[in-house]
Image (cartoon, rainbow, N blue to C red):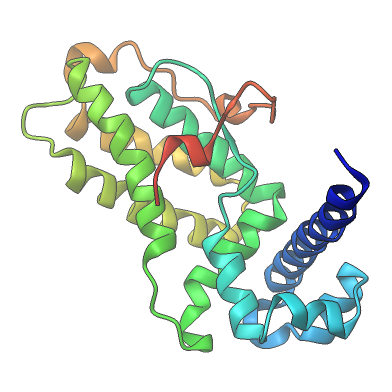
Length: 227
């Protein structure tokens, strides 16, 4: 690489890093304070950036909130395994654990619930997860794991809605401390309607199935779904 090319690339790389730092700081602040309680000054302080750097990347708090909401799945690495119902169960339990600790996911999820406060009515965050779940259900269909009456698209929507409501209930009641256990309970009720009796006997539903490390060889969300 020539010195001229390096000179051009360095500012671009710094800008990418700065934007990532701002987004993570914003996710943390939105998670802690919600949209109404968050402020640009709090986010700037958390990120350690100047006002100029902030407004170079984001023109308003609303624009920043939307970016955090849409990017809630970035950096996640889905559990490995063969596509199908077991992997879908493992993914939901992984997400339950991530919601206990991951500020980017937590902030994005909170904003998806609160988006009316900043003038948004965008179902993209939910549709992204619908697509992730639908792909696993389509694989389950090909493997003969689904009941004939189960529709993959409808079931994906029901699962996203059920998961969303369960995590919100858990957040309010226990600060999500019991979320993995509640997701296991959710599956125990959903599986009889979704899976064949023969397939159900082979599935593992346990809270510790969520303990999946963010390993480089795990599958990132961006490879699991096309928003």
